[in-house]
Amino acid sequence: MVVQQHRSGGGARAVCALAAMGVMAAAAGCSGGGGDRAAADDRAGPGAVEAVRQAAAVLTGADAGDASSARVTGKPGGKDGAEGSPAQAGARAGAGTRAGAGRKAGAGRKAGAGTTAKVNTSMETAAGGTRVTIRGRGTYDFRSRSGRLKVVLPQDAVGKEEHLPITELLAPGALYMMNRGAGVPKDKWVRIDTTALADGNLVTGGATDPMAAAELLLGARAVTYLGESDLAGVTVRHYRGTTDIGRAARQVPAASRGALTAAAKGFRTDTVPFDAYLDEQGRLRKVRHRFSFANEGPAVEVVSTTLLYGFGVPVSVKIPAGRDIYTGEIRQGQQP
Image 1 (cartoon, one colour):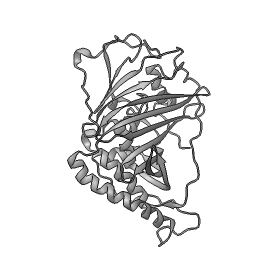
Image 2 (cartoon, helix red, strand yellow; image 1 turned 45 degrees about the horizontal axis):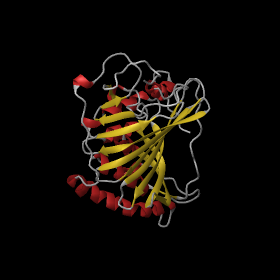
Image 3 (cartoon, helix red, strand yellow; image 1 turned 120 degrees about the horizontal axis):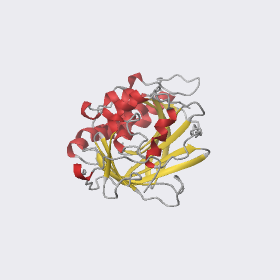
Image 4 (cartoon, helix red, strand yellow; image 1 turned 90 degrees about the vertical axis):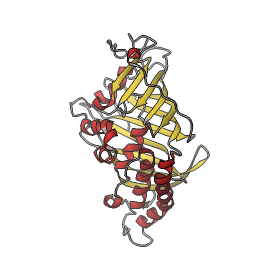
């Protein structure tokens, strides 16, 4: 398992940023479980890397980059790159996806087609031997980099039977939350500068910003194609690999790279394992990232999943006015 450590020396602090929402009250002494490292089949190669990066580029408006430097994961003893080899098999498997995604990256982005979607999120963390899952649901517009989520806290996560859902507005460089914490008036929002967060809001809000989830895939280096599967009635291609936060930050447009740049600086190791699922049109349908942090004790693992569907849905996000934003003290680890 790849371990990421907070440069400030408090690895669990990044995970426990969730405690600021009252979610991870039990995070002290938490320990992480190992991620699913199921054996892949033997199809892999630059084609798989390109397919994943291109799907991310469609949503983010970034350049998919050159996959030629990607590491090929082939069948032991096989000759990667030879005709009929595992590398070639992976390239062929991703060829249709790359072609569809490439067309969509041009015409699709220009027309704005498919750049809005319904979103389901989940974030699972091991804390004190107990797995805590935070779930979200909403919509997101990849053109304006804005969205609205309702995040539901698990029962007893902060020592109470019931908790008000947290409404989150996602915007470039900012996260707005209502029902954020004790002491915040019910009609006020709390604004967080995501470019100032050590994790770039990859885990702080209890849901990874859908744009950041896609942007991370631009840094994909080692990808293995696992075959086709069914996702809610849609045939998808499953890819597994690792991505580099720093590389991804360099790929996104300069005007929107603040949060990922912050995350790249905030971790000692940039490498993040992922599973990505692309449909037959090359669109990203689901992505799961495994963020691992090391403190003085055992590693802490956060598994963040983003599911995209209902492409083209109308999305309306109204950013709160200054008078509606609370600037007073928030009591950590509590909910109103």
